[in-house]
Image 1 (cartoon, helix red, strand yellow):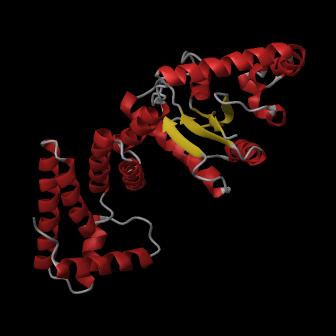
Image 2 (cartoon, one colour):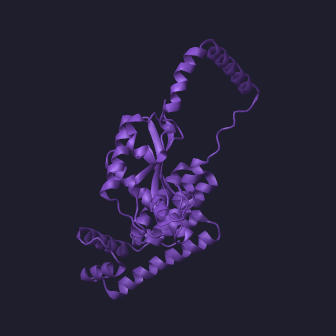
Image 3 (tube, one colour):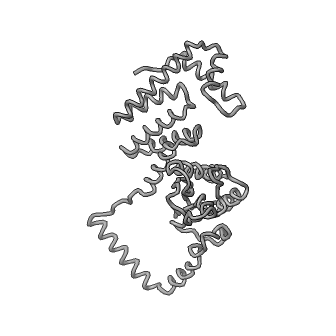
Length: 322
């Protein structure tokens, strides 16, 4: 298996260093090529560099086509060393880790798949396949089956525990009822359309889902306006008040447009809200994000007003640490 030529790596690392020193945000292949020529790379050397990149990329695709993600990943990583900003190469690195994660459920491959997919989306926010990798991993984790507590010994233990719990519950039934009955007036009965006006009254429990009614998006937009940021600040306050709470931001769209594009758009919008929470000091270990496209409308997509309500972000509590 070939290795990148050291002179090419030396040139390309210099190119990317100079590119990062510039104030212009967009790094295109043509700008990199011009910068390379400015530091005395010849046209022949540049062509050789591109050819070498294409060779690694093509071999990676061949390995992946033949269900060999391990060798494919090695080729794509070589290609990435020659052009770290190429969105498609970042996506294929994510795809290799994703395939390896499906084979052995390695946490390392799962994290790497998400990391490369997010980098690919940073370079190309419209990359549907990169967004799909993130959504599929997070959905799989969300629906992961619980452990099966089977066997005679475990059954005996559970019977003993349940019997003891039933006896204690009966002995203290009046006290328990007094504590449990008020729960009927907690956040579960608050109208979801008004949930943002009642943060101080919320008594969180696992599975509670909040519709952030003011975190909406204009058609096709990826921008958070002032009102949306205020609503996310309410969520920041809530999460700071309850540091044991973890959850997932769920992105949604209306039914206009292609389903795959809506899935990618909803994932990107959820990540924008996620990035805002992280910027406000919320730990990334407490928050995840996932996109559902137009598959889970809050109201029927029968009018422009309803479609605007469906272009939204939800927050669902997934864990409360004891």
